[in-house]
Length: 468
Image 1 (cartoon, one colour):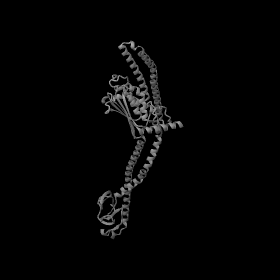
Image 2 (cartoon, rainbow, N blue to C red):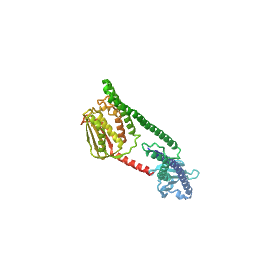
Image 3 (cartoon, rainbow, N blue to C red):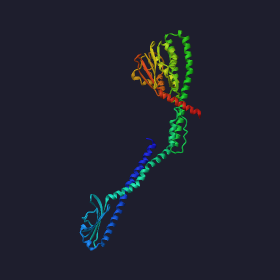
Image 4 (cartoon, rainbow, N blue to C red):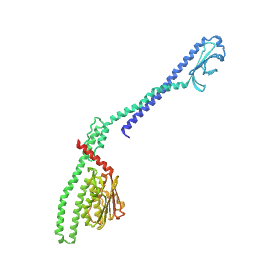
Protein backbone atom coordinates (compact mmCIF):
# COMPACT_ATOMS: atom_id res chain seq x y z
CA UNK A 1 0.00 0.00 0.00
CA UNK A 2 1.27 3.45 -0.90
CA UNK A 3 2.03 6.04 1.77
CA UNK A 4 -0.53 8.40 0.23
CA UNK A 5 -3.35 5.85 0.40
CA UNK A 6 -2.31 4.79 3.90
CA UNK A 7 -2.40 8.36 5.24
CA UNK A 8 -5.75 9.13 3.58
CA UNK A 9 -7.34 5.98 4.97
CA UNK A 10 -5.92 6.56 8.46
CA UNK A 11 -7.07 10.18 8.62
CA UNK A 12 -10.53 9.38 7.25
CA UNK A 13 -10.86 6.51 9.71
CA UNK A 14 -9.93 8.81 12.59
CA UNK A 15 -12.40 11.50 11.43
CA UNK A 16 -15.18 8.93 11.01
CA UNK A 17 -14.47 7.38 14.41
CA UNK A 18 -14.40 10.78 16.13
CA UNK A 19 -17.67 11.73 14.38
CA UNK A 20 -19.28 8.47 15.51
CA UNK A 21 -18.14 8.93 19.11
CA UNK A 22 -19.31 12.55 19.04
CA UNK A 23 -22.70 11.40 17.73
CA UNK A 24 -23.04 8.88 20.56
CA UNK A 25 -22.08 11.46 23.16
CA UNK A 26 -24.40 14.02 21.56
CA UNK A 27 -27.25 11.52 21.57
CA UNK A 28 -26.76 10.86 25.28
CA UNK A 29 -26.59 14.59 26.05
CA UNK A 30 -29.62 15.35 23.86
CA UNK A 31 -31.58 12.57 25.52
CA UNK A 32 -30.75 13.88 28.98
CA UNK A 33 -31.69 17.44 28.09
CA UNK A 34 -34.90 16.28 26.35
CA UNK A 35 -35.91 14.28 29.42
CA UNK A 36 -35.38 17.26 31.70
CA UNK A 37 -37.26 19.55 29.32
CA UNK A 38 -40.23 17.22 28.86
CA UNK A 39 -40.41 16.42 32.58
CA UNK A 40 -40.62 20.12 33.30
CA UNK A 41 -43.32 20.45 30.63
CA UNK A 42 -45.36 17.63 32.20
CA UNK A 43 -44.96 19.19 35.61
CA UNK A 44 -46.20 22.58 34.35
CA UNK A 45 -49.21 21.01 32.65
CA UNK A 46 -50.11 19.04 35.80
CA UNK A 47 -49.90 22.03 38.10
CA UNK A 48 -51.89 24.13 35.65
CA UNK A 49 -54.64 21.51 35.58
CA UNK A 50 -54.75 21.45 39.39
CA UNK A 51 -54.99 25.23 39.50
CA UNK A 52 -57.84 25.35 37.00
CA UNK A 53 -59.75 22.64 38.88
CA UNK A 54 -60.69 25.26 41.51
CA UNK A 55 -63.04 26.86 38.99
CA UNK A 56 -65.24 23.74 38.78
CA UNK A 57 -68.69 24.13 40.51
CA UNK A 58 -70.06 21.66 43.02
CA UNK A 59 -72.30 19.85 40.52
CA UNK A 60 -69.37 19.23 38.22
CA UNK A 61 -67.28 17.94 41.09
CA UNK A 62 -70.02 15.46 42.08
CA UNK A 63 -70.77 14.25 38.51
CA UNK A 64 -69.96 10.68 37.43
CA UNK A 65 -66.96 9.61 35.37
CA UNK A 66 -69.13 9.22 32.29
CA UNK A 67 -69.84 12.95 32.39
CA UNK A 68 -66.14 13.91 32.53
CA UNK A 69 -64.93 16.40 29.97
CA UNK A 70 -62.90 14.78 27.18
CA UNK A 71 -60.20 16.84 25.43
CA UNK A 72 -58.79 15.64 22.08
CA UNK A 73 -54.99 15.19 22.14
CA UNK A 74 -52.40 13.32 20.08
CA UNK A 75 -49.23 13.78 22.12
CA UNK A 76 -50.18 14.36 25.77
CA UNK A 77 -52.54 12.23 27.91
CA UNK A 78 -53.82 13.39 31.27
CA UNK A 79 -56.48 12.66 33.92
CA UNK A 80 -57.88 14.99 36.59
CA UNK A 81 -59.67 13.41 39.58
CA UNK A 82 -61.64 14.90 42.45
CA UNK A 83 -61.28 12.22 45.10
CA UNK A 84 -62.29 9.24 42.93
CA UNK A 85 -64.39 11.22 40.45
CA UNK A 86 -62.88 11.81 36.98
CA UNK A 87 -63.33 15.44 36.04
CA UNK A 88 -61.22 15.81 32.95
CA UNK A 89 -59.26 13.58 30.58
CA UNK A 90 -57.90 13.44 27.06
CA UNK A 91 -59.34 11.13 24.47
CA UNK A 92 -56.19 8.95 24.58
CA UNK A 93 -56.44 8.42 28.37
CA UNK A 94 -58.61 5.68 29.97
CA UNK A 95 -61.48 6.47 32.41
CA UNK A 96 -59.91 4.45 35.18
CA UNK A 97 -57.07 5.79 37.29
CA UNK A 98 -53.78 4.98 35.64
CA UNK A 99 -51.92 4.34 38.90
CA UNK A 100 -52.26 5.07 42.60
CA UNK A 101 -48.55 5.77 43.04
CA UNK A 102 -47.59 8.82 45.10
CA UNK A 103 -46.64 12.16 43.57
CA UNK A 104 -43.65 12.23 41.30
CA UNK A 105 -42.43 10.79 37.96
CA UNK A 106 -42.74 7.18 36.82
CA UNK A 107 -42.92 5.09 33.63
CA UNK A 108 -46.08 3.13 32.79
CA UNK A 109 -47.41 0.96 29.98
CA UNK A 110 -50.87 1.55 28.54
CA UNK A 111 -52.46 1.74 25.12
CA UNK A 112 -49.67 -0.45 23.73
CA UNK A 113 -46.72 1.85 24.44
CA UNK A 114 -44.42 3.17 27.14
CA UNK A 115 -45.32 6.50 28.81
CA UNK A 116 -43.56 8.97 31.06
CA UNK A 117 -46.11 9.92 33.77
CA UNK A 118 -46.14 12.89 36.17
CA UNK A 119 -48.40 12.48 39.26
CA UNK A 120 -49.44 15.38 41.51
CA UNK A 121 -51.87 15.17 44.50
CA UNK A 122 -53.20 17.99 46.70
CA UNK A 123 -52.73 17.08 50.35
CA UNK A 124 -53.94 20.15 52.19
CA UNK A 125 -57.15 20.82 50.27
CA UNK A 126 -60.38 18.80 50.60
CA UNK A 127 -61.76 17.24 48.63
CA UNK A 128 -58.41 15.79 47.45
CA UNK A 129 -57.57 16.38 43.79
CA UNK A 130 -55.17 14.22 41.75
CA UNK A 131 -53.75 14.83 38.28
CA UNK A 132 -51.78 12.44 36.02
CA UNK A 133 -50.03 13.79 32.91
CA UNK A 134 -48.35 11.32 30.52
CA UNK A 135 -46.24 11.55 27.40
CA UNK A 136 -45.05 8.69 25.10
CA UNK A 137 -41.33 7.96 25.56
CA UNK A 138 -41.09 7.37 21.82
CA UNK A 139 -41.53 11.09 21.26
CA UNK A 140 -38.53 11.83 23.44
CA UNK A 141 -36.35 9.32 21.58
CA UNK A 142 -37.56 10.67 18.25
CA UNK A 143 -36.73 14.23 19.26
CA UNK A 144 -33.27 13.25 20.47
CA UNK A 145 -32.61 11.39 17.21
CA UNK A 146 -33.76 14.37 15.18
CA UNK A 147 -31.44 16.66 17.14
CA UNK A 148 -28.41 14.42 16.77
CA UNK A 149 -29.11 13.72 13.09
CA UNK A 150 -29.45 17.42 12.36
CA UNK A 151 -26.06 17.94 14.02
CA UNK A 152 -24.22 14.94 12.52
CA UNK A 153 -25.70 14.86 9.01
CA UNK A 154 -23.77 17.92 7.78
CA UNK A 155 -20.54 16.39 9.09
CA UNK A 156 -21.27 13.07 7.34
CA UNK A 157 -22.11 14.87 4.10
CA UNK A 158 -18.92 16.90 4.25
CA UNK A 159 -16.66 13.85 4.85
CA UNK A 160 -16.12 13.29 1.07
CA UNK A 161 -15.07 16.94 0.76
CA UNK A 162 -12.76 16.51 3.74
CA UNK A 163 -11.35 13.37 2.09
CA UNK A 164 -10.67 15.31 -1.10
CA UNK A 165 -8.86 18.07 0.78
CA UNK A 166 -6.87 15.50 2.76
CA UNK A 167 -5.91 13.68 -0.44
CA UNK A 168 -4.82 16.91 -2.13
CA UNK A 169 -2.86 18.02 0.95
CA UNK A 170 -1.08 14.66 1.25
CA UNK A 171 -0.43 14.58 -2.48
CA UNK A 172 1.14 18.01 -2.33
CA UNK A 173 3.17 17.05 0.73
CA UNK A 174 4.45 13.87 -0.98
CA UNK A 175 5.13 15.59 -4.31
CA UNK A 176 8.91 15.80 -3.68
CA UNK A 177 8.93 12.04 -3.05
CA UNK A 178 7.03 11.47 -6.30
CA UNK A 179 9.51 13.63 -8.21
CA UNK A 180 12.39 11.66 -6.68
CA UNK A 181 10.75 8.35 -7.60
CA UNK A 182 10.23 9.45 -11.21
CA UNK A 183 13.81 10.58 -11.53
CA UNK A 184 15.12 7.30 -10.12
CA UNK A 185 12.85 5.16 -12.33
CA UNK A 186 13.83 7.24 -15.36
CA UNK A 187 17.54 6.59 -14.94
CA UNK A 188 19.18 4.31 -17.48
CA UNK A 189 21.01 1.21 -16.37
CA UNK A 190 24.39 2.89 -16.85
CA UNK A 191 23.40 6.33 -15.50
CA UNK A 192 25.08 6.85 -12.14
CA UNK A 193 25.08 10.64 -12.21
CA UNK A 194 23.89 12.66 -9.23
CA UNK A 195 20.21 13.33 -8.76
CA UNK A 196 19.03 16.72 -9.96
CA UNK A 197 16.03 16.84 -7.60
CA UNK A 198 16.08 19.84 -5.28
CA UNK A 199 13.67 19.90 -2.37
CA UNK A 200 13.06 22.02 0.67
CA UNK A 201 11.64 19.03 2.55
CA UNK A 202 14.00 18.39 5.43
CA UNK A 203 13.16 14.68 5.58
CA UNK A 204 14.14 14.10 1.93
CA UNK A 205 17.34 16.14 1.86
CA UNK A 206 19.47 13.50 3.67
CA UNK A 207 17.92 10.78 1.48
CA UNK A 208 18.92 12.57 -1.74
CA UNK A 209 22.37 13.30 -0.31
CA UNK A 210 22.87 9.64 0.63
CA UNK A 211 21.70 8.45 -2.79
CA UNK A 212 24.10 10.84 -4.53
CA UNK A 213 26.97 9.51 -2.43
CA UNK A 214 25.93 5.96 -3.29
CA UNK A 215 25.79 6.73 -7.01
CA UNK A 216 29.22 8.33 -6.80
CA UNK A 217 30.72 5.28 -5.08
CA UNK A 218 29.06 2.91 -7.54
CA UNK A 219 30.27 4.94 -10.51
CA UNK A 220 33.81 4.88 -9.16
CA UNK A 221 33.60 1.14 -8.52
CA UNK A 222 32.30 0.36 -12.02
CA UNK A 223 34.91 2.63 -13.58
CA UNK A 224 37.69 0.88 -11.67
CA UNK A 225 36.29 -2.49 -12.71
CA UNK A 226 36.17 -1.54 -16.38
CA UNK A 227 39.63 -0.04 -16.30
CA UNK A 228 41.04 -3.03 -14.46
CA UNK A 229 39.58 -5.54 -16.92
CA UNK A 230 40.63 -3.60 -20.01
CA UNK A 231 44.07 -2.66 -18.64
CA UNK A 232 44.76 -6.18 -17.46
CA UNK A 233 43.71 -7.67 -20.78
CA UNK A 234 45.73 -5.09 -22.70
CA UNK A 235 48.83 -5.66 -20.58
CA UNK A 236 48.49 -9.42 -21.02
CA UNK A 237 47.89 -9.37 -24.74
CA UNK A 238 51.24 -7.83 -25.64
CA UNK A 239 53.46 -10.42 -23.90
CA UNK A 240 51.13 -13.21 -25.03
CA UNK A 241 51.51 -12.10 -28.64
CA UNK A 242 55.28 -12.09 -28.31
CA UNK A 243 55.15 -15.47 -26.58
CA UNK A 244 52.99 -16.93 -29.35
CA UNK A 245 55.44 -15.69 -31.98
CA UNK A 246 58.39 -17.20 -30.11
CA UNK A 247 56.59 -20.52 -29.68
CA UNK A 248 55.75 -20.55 -33.39
CA UNK A 249 59.37 -19.82 -34.28
CA UNK A 250 60.51 -22.65 -32.01
CA UNK A 251 58.08 -25.03 -33.63
CA UNK A 252 59.28 -24.06 -37.09
CA UNK A 253 63.02 -24.12 -36.42
CA UNK A 254 63.68 -26.41 -33.47
CA UNK A 255 60.93 -29.05 -33.49
CA UNK A 256 62.97 -31.41 -35.71
CA UNK A 257 65.94 -31.17 -33.38
CA UNK A 258 63.90 -32.20 -30.32
CA UNK A 259 63.06 -35.70 -29.24
CA UNK A 260 59.50 -36.88 -28.74
CA UNK A 261 59.28 -35.54 -25.16
CA UNK A 262 60.57 -32.17 -26.25
CA UNK A 263 58.10 -31.96 -29.12
CA UNK A 264 55.22 -32.88 -26.74
CA UNK A 265 56.34 -30.20 -24.28
CA UNK A 266 56.60 -27.64 -27.07
CA UNK A 267 53.06 -28.53 -28.28
CA UNK A 268 51.72 -28.24 -24.73
CA UNK A 269 53.42 -24.86 -24.39
CA UNK A 270 51.69 -23.67 -27.54
CA UNK A 271 48.32 -24.92 -26.27
CA UNK A 272 48.83 -23.16 -22.93
CA UNK A 273 49.63 -19.88 -24.69
CA UNK A 274 46.52 -20.27 -26.87
CA UNK A 275 44.45 -20.95 -23.77
CA UNK A 276 45.77 -17.86 -22.00
CA UNK A 277 44.96 -15.73 -25.04
CA UNK A 278 41.48 -17.25 -25.15
CA UNK A 279 40.93 -16.53 -21.46
CA UNK A 280 41.95 -12.89 -21.93
CA UNK A 281 39.57 -12.49 -24.88
CA UNK A 282 36.71 -14.12 -22.97
CA UNK A 283 37.27 -11.93 -19.90
CA UNK A 284 37.08 -8.85 -22.10
CA UNK A 285 33.94 -10.14 -23.78
CA UNK A 286 32.36 -11.01 -20.40
CA UNK A 287 33.06 -7.50 -19.15
CA UNK A 288 31.59 -5.91 -22.27
CA UNK A 289 28.42 -8.04 -22.16
CA UNK A 290 27.76 -7.62 -18.43
CA UNK A 291 24.16 -6.35 -18.02
CA UNK A 292 25.41 -3.67 -15.62
CA UNK A 293 28.03 -2.39 -18.06
CA UNK A 294 26.63 -2.77 -21.57
CA UNK A 295 24.57 0.08 -23.00
CA UNK A 296 21.61 -1.69 -24.57
CA UNK A 297 21.42 -0.24 -28.12
CA UNK A 298 18.82 -2.35 -29.93
CA UNK A 299 18.91 -2.20 -33.73
CA UNK A 300 17.17 -3.90 -36.62
CA UNK A 301 19.15 -6.91 -37.86
CA UNK A 302 18.88 -9.46 -40.67
CA UNK A 303 19.15 -12.79 -38.81
CA UNK A 304 20.13 -15.08 -41.68
CA UNK A 305 22.93 -12.78 -42.83
CA UNK A 306 24.26 -12.57 -39.26
CA UNK A 307 24.35 -16.38 -38.92
CA UNK A 308 26.09 -16.73 -42.28
CA UNK A 309 28.69 -14.16 -41.19
CA UNK A 310 29.48 -16.07 -37.97
CA UNK A 311 29.69 -19.42 -39.79
CA UNK A 312 32.02 -17.81 -42.35
CA UNK A 313 34.26 -16.45 -39.58
CA UNK A 314 34.42 -19.88 -37.91
CA UNK A 315 34.68 -21.89 -41.12
CA UNK A 316 38.48 -22.48 -40.92
CA UNK A 317 37.98 -24.13 -37.52
CA UNK A 318 35.00 -26.09 -38.85
CA UNK A 319 37.02 -27.37 -41.81
CA UNK A 320 39.92 -28.21 -39.53
CA UNK A 321 37.72 -30.71 -37.70
CA UNK A 322 35.95 -31.80 -40.91
CA UNK A 323 32.55 -30.93 -39.42
CA UNK A 324 29.38 -30.94 -41.48
CA UNK A 325 27.43 -27.79 -40.60
CA UNK A 326 23.91 -27.05 -41.78
CA UNK A 327 21.99 -23.77 -41.62
CA UNK A 328 18.20 -23.90 -41.73
CA UNK A 329 17.02 -20.31 -41.73
CA UNK A 330 15.03 -17.87 -43.80
CA UNK A 331 15.38 -14.17 -44.42
CA UNK A 332 13.87 -12.45 -41.38
CA UNK A 333 14.26 -9.20 -39.46
CA UNK A 334 14.83 -9.14 -35.73
CA UNK A 335 15.49 -6.47 -33.10
CA UNK A 336 18.56 -7.02 -30.94
CA UNK A 337 21.93 -5.62 -29.95
CA UNK A 338 24.26 -6.42 -32.83
CA UNK A 339 27.49 -6.89 -30.86
CA UNK A 340 25.75 -8.98 -28.20
CA UNK A 341 23.95 -11.21 -30.70
CA UNK A 342 27.15 -11.76 -32.72
CA UNK A 343 28.96 -12.75 -29.53
CA UNK A 344 26.16 -15.12 -28.52
CA UNK A 345 26.02 -16.90 -31.89
CA UNK A 346 29.82 -17.13 -32.09
CA UNK A 347 30.03 -18.70 -28.63
CA UNK A 348 27.28 -21.26 -29.30
CA UNK A 349 28.57 -22.36 -32.70
CA UNK A 350 32.17 -22.18 -31.41
CA UNK A 351 31.34 -24.46 -28.49
CA UNK A 352 29.58 -26.91 -30.82
CA UNK A 353 32.66 -26.95 -33.05
CA UNK A 354 35.06 -27.44 -30.10
CA UNK A 355 33.30 -30.34 -28.44
CA UNK A 356 32.03 -32.22 -31.49
CA UNK A 357 34.38 -35.03 -32.61
CA UNK A 358 36.09 -34.80 -35.99
CA UNK A 359 33.68 -35.55 -38.79
CA UNK A 360 30.65 -34.73 -36.61
CA UNK A 361 27.60 -32.71 -37.50
CA UNK A 362 26.39 -29.27 -36.40
CA UNK A 363 22.89 -27.94 -37.07
CA UNK A 364 21.94 -24.26 -36.79
CA UNK A 365 18.32 -23.26 -37.35
CA UNK A 366 15.90 -20.49 -36.46
CA UNK A 367 12.20 -20.20 -35.72
CA UNK A 368 10.74 -16.70 -36.09
CA UNK A 369 7.23 -15.39 -35.45
CA UNK A 370 5.64 -12.07 -34.46
CA UNK A 371 6.08 -12.73 -30.76
CA UNK A 372 9.65 -14.08 -30.59
CA UNK A 373 12.55 -15.63 -32.44
CA UNK A 374 14.35 -18.79 -31.38
CA UNK A 375 17.91 -19.78 -32.25
CA UNK A 376 18.65 -23.52 -32.05
CA UNK A 377 22.16 -25.00 -32.16
CA UNK A 378 22.56 -28.80 -32.10
CA UNK A 379 25.64 -31.00 -32.41
CA UNK A 380 26.61 -34.67 -32.45
CA UNK A 381 29.08 -34.31 -29.58
CA UNK A 382 29.02 -36.05 -26.20
CA UNK A 383 26.51 -33.55 -24.82
CA UNK A 384 26.06 -32.55 -21.17
CA UNK A 385 24.45 -34.50 -18.36
CA UNK A 386 21.09 -33.11 -17.30
CA UNK A 387 22.35 -32.74 -13.72
CA UNK A 388 24.93 -30.20 -14.94
CA UNK A 389 22.61 -28.04 -17.05
CA UNK A 390 22.50 -25.30 -14.41
CA UNK A 391 26.17 -25.41 -13.43
CA UNK A 392 27.55 -24.87 -16.93
CA UNK A 393 26.34 -21.26 -16.74
CA UNK A 394 28.64 -20.56 -13.77
CA UNK A 395 31.80 -18.64 -14.51
CA UNK A 396 34.92 -20.75 -15.10
CA UNK A 397 33.02 -24.01 -14.75
CA UNK A 398 33.87 -26.72 -17.29
CA UNK A 399 32.29 -30.13 -17.57
CA UNK A 400 34.87 -32.67 -16.49
CA UNK A 401 37.40 -29.98 -15.54
CA UNK A 402 40.05 -29.37 -18.15
CA UNK A 403 39.89 -32.91 -19.60
CA UNK A 404 38.02 -33.00 -22.90
CA UNK A 405 38.02 -35.48 -25.75
CA UNK A 406 38.36 -32.56 -28.11
CA UNK A 407 41.63 -31.47 -26.45
CA UNK A 408 40.70 -27.82 -27.07
CA UNK A 409 41.46 -25.05 -24.64
CA UNK A 410 38.71 -23.28 -22.75
CA UNK A 411 38.07 -21.30 -19.61
CA UNK A 412 34.39 -21.95 -18.81
CA UNK A 413 33.16 -18.45 -19.66
CA UNK A 414 31.35 -19.08 -22.96
CA UNK A 415 27.92 -20.04 -21.63
CA UNK A 416 28.19 -17.44 -18.84
CA UNK A 417 28.59 -14.78 -21.56
CA UNK A 418 25.66 -16.26 -23.48
CA UNK A 419 23.48 -16.12 -20.38
CA UNK A 420 24.38 -12.44 -19.82
CA UNK A 421 23.33 -11.62 -23.37
CA UNK A 422 20.07 -13.53 -23.00
CA UNK A 423 19.27 -11.56 -19.84
CA UNK A 424 19.99 -8.31 -21.67
CA UNK A 425 17.34 -9.18 -24.24
CA UNK A 426 14.86 -10.44 -21.59
CA UNK A 427 15.08 -13.85 -23.23
CA UNK A 428 15.34 -17.48 -22.16
CA UNK A 429 18.01 -20.14 -22.73
CA UNK A 430 17.30 -23.84 -22.47
CA UNK A 431 19.59 -26.87 -22.69
CA UNK A 432 18.36 -30.30 -23.84
CA UNK A 433 19.49 -33.48 -25.55
CA UNK A 434 19.35 -33.36 -29.33
CA UNK A 435 16.99 -36.02 -30.65
CA UNK A 436 18.27 -35.48 -34.18
CA UNK A 437 22.06 -35.52 -33.62
CA UNK A 438 22.20 -37.13 -30.12
CA UNK A 439 24.42 -34.35 -28.76
CA UNK A 440 23.62 -31.07 -27.01
CA UNK A 441 20.72 -28.88 -28.06
CA UNK A 442 20.70 -25.19 -27.08
CA UNK A 443 17.54 -23.10 -27.53
CA UNK A 444 17.67 -19.32 -27.12
CA UNK A 445 14.40 -17.39 -27.33
CA UNK A 446 14.16 -13.59 -27.49
CA UNK A 447 10.81 -11.75 -27.20
CA UNK A 448 10.44 -9.65 -30.33
CA UNK A 449 7.81 -7.19 -29.00
CA UNK A 450 9.85 -6.30 -25.92
CA UNK A 451 12.98 -5.68 -28.00
CA UNK A 452 11.08 -3.56 -30.51
CA UNK A 453 9.62 -1.45 -27.66
CA UNK A 454 13.09 -1.03 -26.13
CA UNK A 455 14.51 0.06 -29.47
CA UNK A 456 11.80 2.69 -29.89
CA UNK A 457 12.29 3.86 -26.32
CA UNK A 458 16.05 4.21 -26.77
CA UNK A 459 15.59 6.09 -30.03
CA UNK A 460 13.10 8.50 -28.43
CA UNK A 461 15.41 9.10 -25.45
CA UNK A 462 18.32 9.70 -27.81
CA UNK A 463 16.31 12.26 -29.77
CA UNK A 464 15.36 14.05 -26.55
CA UNK A 465 19.02 14.18 -25.51
CA UNK A 466 20.00 15.52 -28.93
CA UNK A 467 17.33 18.23 -28.73
CA UNK A 468 18.49 19.36 -25.31
